[in-house]
Image 1 (cartoon, rainbow, N blue to C red):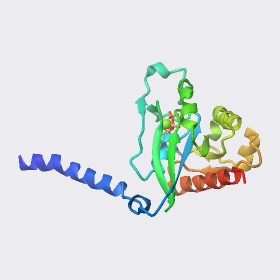
Image 2: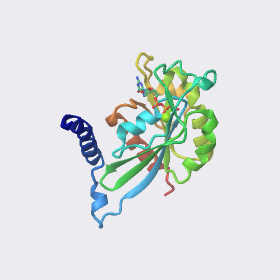
Image 3: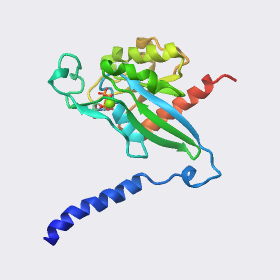
Image 4: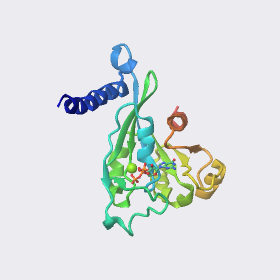
Length: 215
Ligand SMILES: Nc1nc2c(ncn2[C@@H]2O[C@H](COP(=O)(O)OP(=O)(O)OP(=O)(O)O)[C@@H](O)[C@H]2O)c(=O)[nH]1
Ligand SMILES: [Mg+2]
């Protein structure tokens, strides 16, 4: 019996410890003299390009994910040939947070990839300082709607090329040319699964957004 109880209790305790470790308080949360700059960043791009993966890879809090299982109803609508292992999709948004330096806090909002949820973009974009548009070189045109959207609303953005295993590698300048991305917009290679790689992209976006600010 005791054995059975410890079986149940142990995972709960370790889960709590893990959660506490994950959600360690940052200096800006404990020091009243600090006034961190809080910024909202969007993570956008086509269906299954790695938006949820990117937010989860970098978030210092347990990310909010709104994943729903994909059913047969999505066959013919959502193309999973490039990501055959994909069984879920984001139906509202992803949410995560990262403290970049002690006084710069980024709140990351991942958009839903399926076209039928694009009506949410206006709400998600409100108040954002910039966006990361993820691109998969096997399906570059999937990121056109996101590029058009940020171009038309004037929100600073960077393009992050998320190379999937087995896909052909391209240089950032090749992707820029293929997508006709303006010279001022940074194009970077990123691995959405790697925290360091995602942080590099976010730093690039913050720098680009600061440059875009009026003097
Ligand atoms: N090999 C590889 N797989 C990746 C990479 N990024 C994401 N994946 C996988 O690709 C699949 C899709 O990733 P998601 O993060 O769910 O993509 P998403 O853009 O959030 O998808 P939607 O919300 O449905 O539009 C998952 O199975 C990930 O594990 C990557 O850089 N390399
Ligand atoms: Mg997602």
